[in-house]
Length: 265
Image (cartoon, rainbow, N blue to C red; front, side):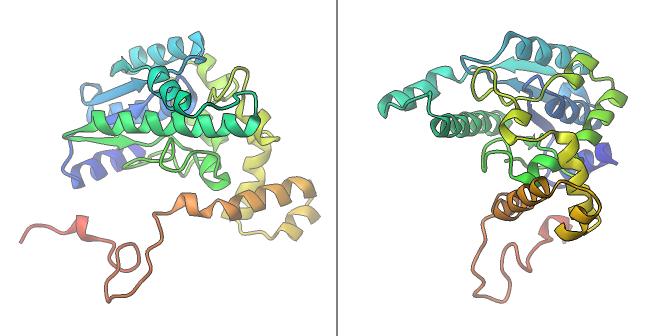
């Protein structure tokens, strides 16, 4: 299904190639593997875009994924341009809030490169999983930006199982997820809970539509349920295109949704 999704959506857009940001983590590994199967690895470009504190393991894992699935991997460092930006307006990198700001800048710089390299006939394939999208754990117009996203309806725990099925090396699947926003940073450490715990709450809250009171009555931790619900609520804007005020009969994003399925007369 996911392979057909990539093939069909790329064809509808009249495009021929896929561009995937390959971080060395499991999410991008799965997206790259699926794109390679859908379009052929010769039509997939992987981009590894390290910052100065990106780990040697991330580079090694990105190369291993490229070798495993047969697509070309290019390395495009982003340190020079990101540091130049922050030199113009110096910041305190020890401040946790500034670290988040810098991480957002890195994510948007990486995505800018992916979109540039997709010209003229490529589509940018997303790597954000369902857990990240629901929690808003990502950068709007950064790592969350894409033309299509084959893994966005898979919770992190589901994506890990798919990765093993596809043949992603277990070392990559099992390592602690990190956006490498700073040395030693991990997703779960920053979030304050594990993906496994979050996925259980999100599945019952979103897919099964249980109310917080029902989740708490069923034994879920009240503080965790409350925190996750608030993250889902406040980050809704990240999951949709910019909201357009409707003033006409047919409005983009409201009731004008399907022209890409039109066939030429």
